[in-house]
Each structure stands twice: as structure tokens, then as C-alpha cells.
Length: 424
Ligand SMILES: NC(=O)c1ccc[n+]([C@@H]2O[C@H](COP(=O)([O-])OP(=O)(O)OC[C@H]3O[C@@H](n4cnc5c(N)ncnc54)[C@H](O)[C@@H]3O)[C@@H](O)[C@H]2O)c1
Ligand SMILES: N[C@H](CO)Cc1c[nH]c[nH+]1
Ligand SMILES: [Zn+2]
Image (cartoon, rainbow, N blue to C red; front, side):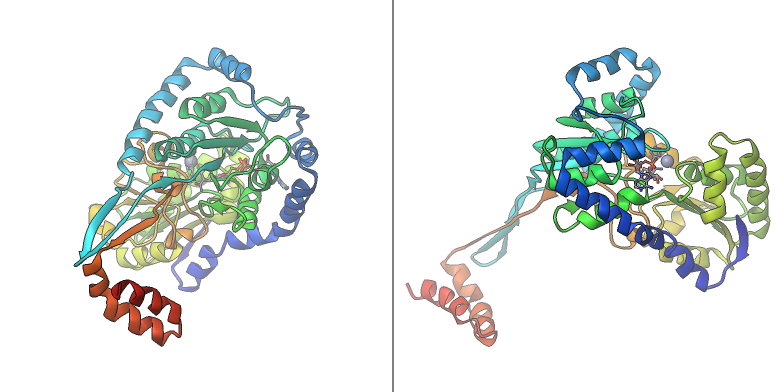
């Protein structure tokens, strides 16, 4: 963990910090994918034993296992899942786009229709923590979009079971099939299929660097959402911010994974120092202390900038998964934010609100991908074919566009297809 004065080269160094990790594991990850492609379920069994310590005969979770989970679940957790699901549904219904057909010019009607992707695979992580919340975040928007077949894969515990809250969350969100397989092997199975798992059209969901590298490798054979790797938070704060809140936000992201990143950018050196001291103290006693310590050592940074303008510049270059703004008037900075997966304004808005239940999606782009991707949404599961209808008037409106351009491009049949209709 370091406190450093801002220098321009830091941005490149920090922004790139996850990508080399992904590249470092490409080779072993590719080998696993190839083996799953070649050997199907046999390879899934081998890698599940190797990485999760579990012997799995049947990968598909049975209805009885799901019913058992409903009996075992802690009532408080079940209620929390129900309430989270309600907010997530409300938010994601609002994201449904409209179909439309409108007059574009005389005799030309244009528009778009909305269709769901037919089958999707949701990856629910389960290595260093369990993620029932991710089951809600991936399956609910797919369901709202109208996806016909929603499958999900999640790593089993070493006794071959799946965490009960994850099973319940997946079931209540509307998963059609749930499989006890995680990591690279799950991504390969969803992309290429095995004897047990039929392949899907698109794979979504977050994961560690191995899972993320696997998604990157299968992209093109199937669609993926985006790079949703180890968690990141960047906090822009001024001297008005509460250092305790900042420190706990950094720890909350760090506890996900030693590869997670927590960055504070502030013009207040004294705030930076306070946060540093609180962190030093807190990590001595924190649960999951080993993961937190490693994460903060690897990718924890406190960066002192000249002013809030420089902080915003840094943040836009970094393009964090989560951006928290804890300044006197956080809304005034919002207009200047260009790149961030999800933005948390004000000191009463912790990232955990979005992680679990305010309704927004917690599957978000990492490794600088917020420069060009938004987080998972209902639209991630939709396609928008365009539609057009021309009348005779429309042919006349377009003739001086289509015919000269088609002939200029040397594509004479294109021009001909137009002329034929004009001359009928
Ligand atoms: N960006 C987002 O939207 C978002 C959301 C939630 C969680 N996350 C991130 O998801 C990740 C969850 O990671 P996790 O590890 O807890 O669960 P995970 O399910 O992503 O990974 C566990 C699997 O990794 C595989 N694995 C472990 N070591 C391996 C190795 N050496 N070679 C090949 N495969 C190996 C195993 O198959 C194991 O089942 C964290 O990094 C967390 O920060 C990101
Ligand atoms: N912070 C994670 C996204 O990076 C999401 C999450 C799930 N559970 C807890 N947190
Ligand atoms: Zn989290």
C-alpha cells in the first residue's frame, strides 16, 4: 500500500495492472478449454477434482437439491434475496428498450424490433466467497429480456454441493438449468457444449482472472458480456470526506480477491494519511485479512492530486469498475465523469448498496473496459433488428442516393435492384 503524489505515468501503470495478469494465464487457460472441447464431461470431472477438490458424477443440479436448499436456508438470507430481487427486477424492467417504426423521410418507414437472445449462460463465481447475489444480477435481467433458455454454472464445494443461497437465488430468478461446474471448464462447457451441457449463444457473469481469461478466449465462438474480472473501486474524495468510510470501501473491494484494486484519489494529503493509518490498523484485525492485505499490497493506492479536476482526469483515464465520489458536492462532478462502470455519489452511498440490493447491476466492466462498455443490463440480452418499408414515394426519395452511390462503388446490381422497382 502506497501514498504517492500524482505523476502522469501512474495512470498507465494502474490502468494496465490487470491486463498482464490475464495474459499471463492465457496459455494454461487455453489448454483447459481445448481439453473440455475434446473430452467433454470427462474433462469437466478432471478439472473439477483438480481445482475444487470435488468428485462430481452428475453436473446438473436436481429439483430435489433445490428443494433441500429451501429447507436449509436461513430465513433472513431468504428474505434479503426476495427484497433484492424485487429492486433488481424494478430497475431492469425500466431498462427495457422500445420497439418503434417511424417516418424517416417521405415514403420511408424505419424502425427497430426487440428480440431476446435465445440461450445464455450465467457464470456465478464461487471460489473465495459465494455469490448468490450474482445469480440474481445475471439471471433476472435475462429473464426480463425474455431469454428462452437460461443456464448457470457455479463451482461446487469439495463435498460436491452447491451453496444453498446460490441455488435458491438461481431458482427464484428463473434459471432453467443449474450446473455444478466452475472456472475455465464451466466457460468452455457453456461455449462448446459437452455430453451434459448444451452450448449457449452468450456467456455473462464475473469471475477471477482464470474465468475472465477463458471468457476472452471463447469470445467470437460465442458472445460474452465484457471483461468482468477482479473487483475495483476508485474513490474521489476531498477534505470533507470521512476517512473511516473511505478505508472500509477500500477494504470491501480488497476482500474479494488478492487481484482486486482499491484506489483513493484526493487533493487532501491529510485525508490520504488518515486513510492510510486507518487501513494499516484495520487490516490487522480484519476477517479475510490475508486476501485484503495481498490486494492492498498489490493494487492499493492513495494518490495525492493537485485538485479535484486532476482527480476526475485520473478517474476517467483509469475507468474504474466502481467510482465513489465523496466530496462536498458530489453531483457537481458527475457531469465530468466519462468512464466508470457504476457511480456512487455521496458518503451515504456505499458500493455494497449496488452489490446487493439497490437494484442496479453489480456485474461491471474492469481493467479499463468501462471506457467502452457499460455494466450488465437488460439490453445485454437483447438484439434489435432494424426494419424498413418503402413506398413508391420512398423509392423516389432515395433514388438520388442509392443509384449514384451504388454505381460509384461498382456494385451495379445494387443500382439495378432499385431502378427495376422505379421503372415498373
Ligand atoms: N467485475 C465484476 O462485475 C465482479 C462481480 C463480482 C465478483 N467479481 C470478481 O469475481 C471473482 C470471483 O473469484 P473467485 O476466485 O472467488 O471465484 P471464481 O468462481 O471466479 O473462480 C473460482 C474458480 O477458479 C478456478 N481456478 C482457481 N485457480 C485456478 C488455476 N490456478 N488455474 C485454473 N483455474 C483456476 C477454479 O476452477 C475455481 O472453481 C473475484 O475476482 C471478484 O472480485 C467481479
Ligand atoms: N463488488 C462486486 C463487483 O465487483 C459485486 C459483489 C457481489 N457480492 C459482493 N460484491
Ligand atoms: Zn463487492
